[in-house]
Length: 176
Length: 175
Image (cartoon, rainbow over all chains, first blue to last red; front, side, top):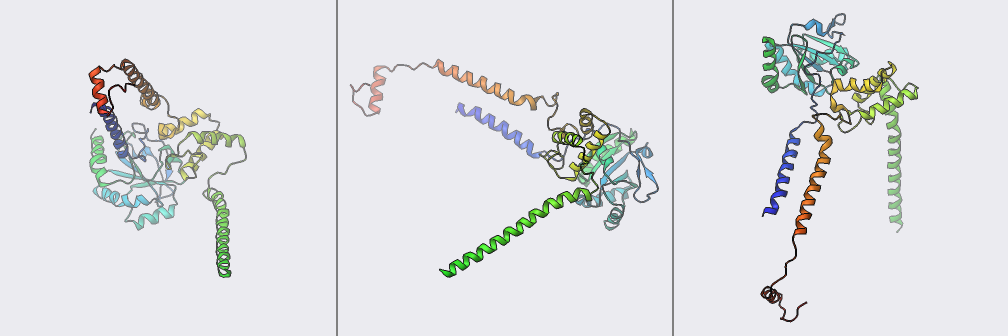
């Protein structure tokens, strides 16, 4: 009996590691930008191309930067969630329209229930996206009053993610 | 017999037709691929083979984050072509390889590297296989030493008799 004990222990440890590995999402790469200042940018606004937007304009506010595009399929999934969040007026949502065309982006917003963003920055060639370490759309960053990135959500924003992580952290940052 | 030959030749014709179609499709694919990046506005390799060689060397060290298990050099995704464009721009701007790799790590983390750096969080990754080797060698040595300690014991006469009986042999057949 005792001779089976060791292989059994090895098996259990191995199974444990594999089970933990299965729960990990390989698409969720921890961002090295958390705790770092927002990358500097100055881009044209989507709805008013003669105006520009940059992180300095948002100093003193806790805000979300949501990277989106009209070609992004999972953005459709999170769009109603963002619209509802905008209706609640709990947080400022800024869009980063990533590698998109202006008319296609505006049409997409009109077709999918409206524009939840106070402003969307146009990152047509995706260069600012690279500074943010964007590799899959949608991605969402939570930025504090001093312009420091505090949290990154990869994939579509869900009600659950808002309720359990993003909004509590945002409230904490707004108070502090 | 003639019918069978007819059938056979009809089948053959179908096969050659299918092959011809396949050949046309295969001819079209590389054409599409080389046209796509240009239409995308991505800079095509601009002549300088030295720059391109460096771009490729660096691209092989970096992981394509959207395709998993492929380097930027191997991948055709838009993420990879953006990365290659960025590397090319940095090389033209006179940055060295170390600076370019650092640029990528600052934005995408160590995961972007195919050869992660040795540090406190990765020592198990690098040392794990060697640790496992040492552990199994220790285990093997202990096993072998234990086995050497077991000297074959002689059977007493009664034990031998009992054994023989079990084997169905008569006394005196001693080996």
